[in-house]
Image (cartoon, rainbow over all chains, first blue to last red; front, top):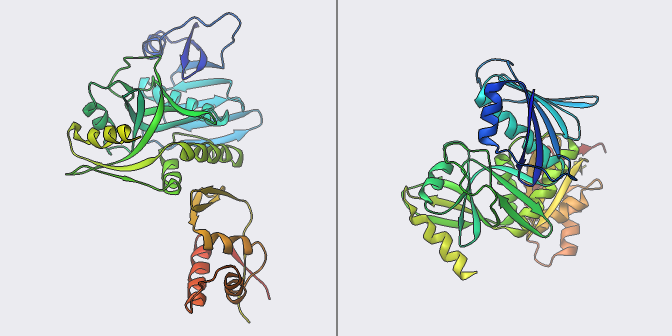
Length: 267
Length: 90
């Protein structure tokens, strides 16, 4: 069993893994860091291979038992303590492990009311972060690629910290195809775009209530229990009170940024 | 005798700008209400009929038109369809 430490968002993570192939994959995606001596990890993960079958679908069954919560998909299973501070992840292959890590981290940050992991790409313009959210195929990766040379904080799964004193996006290690360039970057969130691919550019601001109703479908996994749902509601309410949500119709070129950047100037 | 309605329990509510949002935390369904809808929702904490709601709204708001009864019936039907209301025995 080999061990290393890494950080995701502002959380220190300890990872133990007995599989050499998964260990090198993990080290590649989650760079090793030295934790300060006084600080223990926020979460302790044990990773194993050899579970289940190749990817079937995204359906995750969540069950609770005394002392643990289980997230089970055809190609992975997560067994976590109820406070999410220790978990065992068993995965079929690297894809399953990647999805399991996102599943676990999303549930962790909702449980601790730190923030949300959203199905969104995120680019930085003028020191502010702008999210592009949507279901699979809506254009998150396309918007990210069209945002070059702006720094990307995520290309499919955005880490959004939501607190009373502000909302910020942290660099996401959960990448689809565009690698991390600024692993320590954190930017205040200025806007959320719900994407619609179109023949023209148009940006329409939604009422906060519409944003509140639409955003839950872009949140990665959480346990559908009353307490966790209350956490989601509280986080979304804070988020909608601080960040505007727009519907963005965009052409397949970078001209949509004129609508976003000009808005920055007006502010 | 008019049908009486009461709202179900176990809902979270959130205020955002001019709207109220009612969240069914078990079924993860959300319903948006405007100010008048919210007033009705609070009144529905106790059993209400179409007439009792219309009378209350006429007390609270100056411009409640002739179509108020049919609007309220429609509104109660929609809330019932969303699973937010239940009927109360006479």
